[in-house]
Each structure stands twice: as structure tokens, then as C-alpha cells.
Image 1 (cartoon, rainbow, N blue to C red):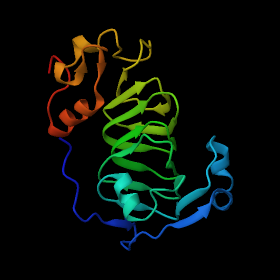
Image 2: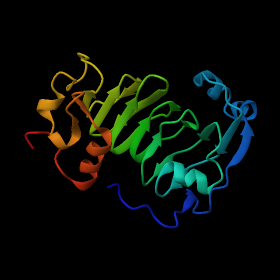
Image 3: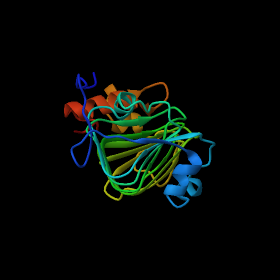
Amino acid sequence: MPPERPASPEHLTSSGHPASPERLTFADADARLDGSLSACFQGDYDTVLFFDGDVVLSGDFLDALTGLGGREAGIVAITGDLTVSGPIALYDDTPGLYVEGTTRAETLEGGDAEIYIQDGVFTHLVYGHYNHGILEAGRVETPWVIDYDHDLRITAPGARHVDNYGSSSEAEFTRDDIAERFVPEVVDPGRGSIVVERFLDRLRAGLPVRSWS
């Protein structure tokens, strides 16, 4: 089971005061960022939840956005660093995420959303799921990068790379050998792929995921 979320999460800026984002149109937010949003994002978005400065959030990123009234925004844009004590898991097409500083979280998981960050540090993994979204980052520190046919654009030199969809020559582990090289608790035997939720549960619990561990 995933760890219990805090009952009353705090949503703070780096100054220690409650975060107070602005709700802007895409055009206004893009102007504030000198055209950076339109240079990155490919979809059509109406609203942007705009944080000017560093942001620290406790718990799950999407839960924290709900507490700030921003779950329905098309994009969350942050001009400083983003630090989240829980996961950043963006499987729906909105909200997208744009961070100009360093992003730190338990995980970074992308599905249908567009995610554009700079450097990042992620405790357990980075995961890109299927081919509708984009996950683009600078240099990333994380132990695992798992790709399931995603538009995954990151540099993670210290990570172990898993192609959870096919047989990429650039991945250390692929569908050809996942069933043999990982513990059965994290493998879908019918597909020969990692079940990411189970994989993450074991990482959180400090349990081995490799079959020889």
C-alpha cells in the first residue's frame, strides 16, 4: 500500500507563507515567461496556475493542487524550484507542468500530460506511460527510469533504464528479460512487463526489486 497521506498538508512558498498562485490566461502567463510556454507546449490550454518563486508542497502533488484550488488548471507554471514530499503523477492530459528551477519529489510520472522541467531529483523513479504526453527534463538524479512507449526526453546518467514496452538497445532491461531479472511480485507474467505500482510499493518499503537481490 502507498504511504498514508498527511491529513492536513501544508502548501508553502520558500518564504514560509501560504502559497498564493495567480490564475492567468495562457497568453498572460506566456508573456510573463517571455514566451517559454508557447515554445514548449503543443496542446491548447486556457488557464495557467502561476507561482512566482519557489514552491514547497507536502504530500501528493495533485492533492496539494486541489487544496490550492488549482486542480482544474490547464498548466501549473512555477518560476522557481518545486519541492514535493510525495509523488508527482500526471496521467491525465491536464494539468501540464512547467518548472524553471529544480524539481524534487518522490517520483515523476507522466501520462497524457505535457511536462517540461529543468534539472530534477526523484527519490524512487521517473516513469513515462504511453505515447500521448511528453516528459522533458534536463539532468535528472533518480535510481530508475521506466519508459512505456512515451515521449521521454531526459538525461539520467546514474539511473537504470527499463524499456517496459519493447526492446530498445538503449535500455538496460527490456521486455525480453524483465521476467527473468526482476522479482515476480513486480512483474506481469502475461505481458513480461513491470507493474509500476507494485514496483514503486516495494521501493517505498525498502524491498528488493531485482531477482538476484
